[in-house]
Length: 123
Ligand SMILES: [Zn+2]
Image (tube, rainbow, N blue to C red; front, side):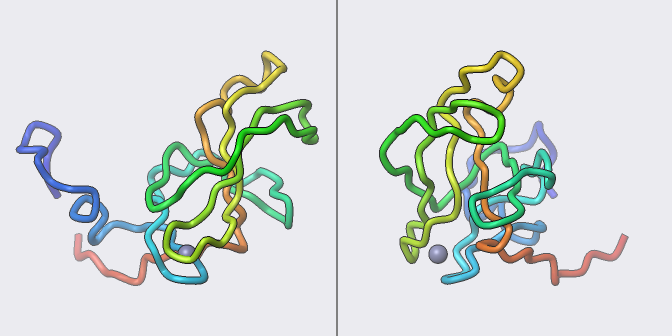
């Protein structure tokens, strides 16, 4: 694996190769790295959700205010660019101070993701 001081001119796909990641359950597009996972203990719209730092191969829908369990949040639905399936939502803003840590993060439905770590590493 590249060290932080090595040449960083690699594209996103290269970075993701060979690292545990989550991919879209419909079209297998890579959505995020396991390293980006903040918490598995969130509620999605259809069950368990993951709070995630960043995602790729996704696009955002229109911003809207939504009443969630933890108060009003300005969110946008997140869609897979490969198959247009709705994967979860993105937190633009949280009204409650205690929820501010979610801003700029993704909530992705566990049911929509497949964990891919079938690779092996001898170490
Ligand atoms: Zn997809």
